[in-house]
Length: 354
View 1 (cartoon, rainbow, N blue to C red):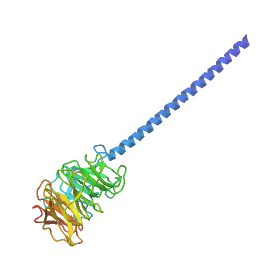
View 2 (view 1 turned 90 degrees about the horizontal axis):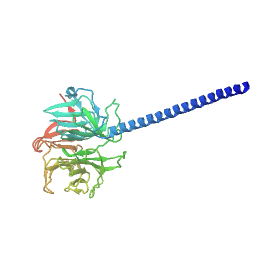
View 3 (view 1 turned 120 degrees about the vertical axis):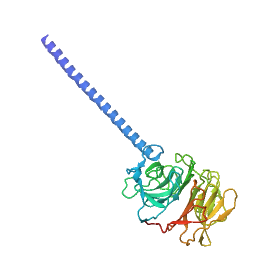
View 4 (view 1 turned 180 degrees about the vertical axis):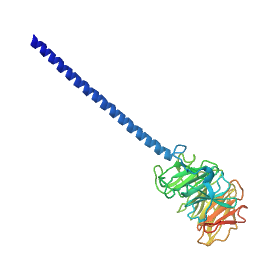
């Protein structure tokens, strides 16, 4: 009987040990499963965070703007003596009074007879397009910046102090883009494939939110070139090419050559006309094409330019009738306030002097 009790006691102890071991294993297994779930959840959260960050960098209206730490009151300053080069656009933003020049080293502004410049955000701007509330641009970050290169498509409404990342940040650099002054149509030439575009000409009807490739039927040029969009009607745009200038009024579905011009190097719309600069008989010229009367063209009396100094960009101020400007490949900048009848030279070979 005593042996039986000892055997029972030993069995109870052994059972207790076995149960304790099972409990420990079950507890360890539960902890391991809980840890694996936590790890998986953390990994999913990290992936979601990375995806949100990527979307923020490439979508409008989300976080990720590039803002200078220089106070707004000190961001625009008097321009130092310098030579402005590698100009990739000029224009008249509606939120300022001056003529903007997008250069290899930031923005330069000619306002009320004085040259000004930005104290920061001195990026290599390309594809510059002024609008009623600021400007669109593309390009490359300034030297020493920690920004991704290229900048993609950006927009500013505060004279360049804050740059909103519209799309393709770190992916693409657009040398040719244009937008209406106060409409939602934005056009660009994509020269290299990116995450959502092949090579070609694209249109956004919502300021960069979405894109569609345009047909351009009737475009009989071997090259693509400068784009100009009508300030009020986003369906009307022109493209200057080596084979002449082509115009559309249906968002690029159909293109038609305007006139018999060859080698058109620059174009810009005013409200009533299209300004173009063709090379004719080895001479640099400027014409104003009437949008209402097909074939009607008036030659404007521009300053004499040498053959190796063609006009590269033209700008027309939608808010001041007759105020136009142009710049040449050698960075000679001219402005007119009477529709091109008389001109004032603002830059000679890009030099800003005191």
